[in-house]
Length: 117
Image (cartoon, rainbow, N blue to C red; front, side, top):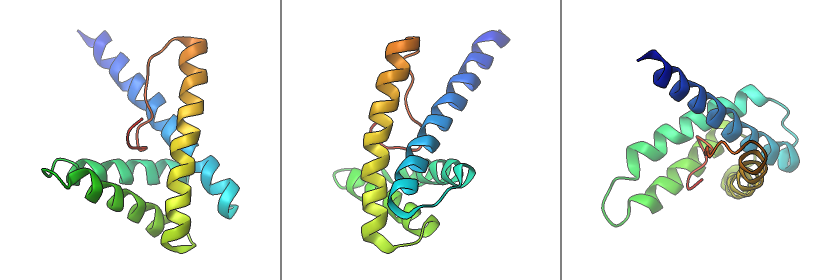
């Protein structure tokens, strides 16, 4: 009974660390911010913002994307343009990280805090 719960918590933790790593790498390259913990918190807040807005019919995903980029804009310096670039870089980074992790370890996990991954 406890084993599936522990497995779910483990998978969530790994997905969160991967989402945070993707945001960290993107922010590190673009604006030279070197704080992995900050990126993990940004991933959590971005996921909450996405979850609260993506359910809206027809326009939900667009609003959710703006909210997610808005969280990045709030958490990192440089304005909306840099936030959008950090978001796109995080998305691409997450794709590469997950391709490698899932291919090597065969886990089949995602990246929490990076939409669409």
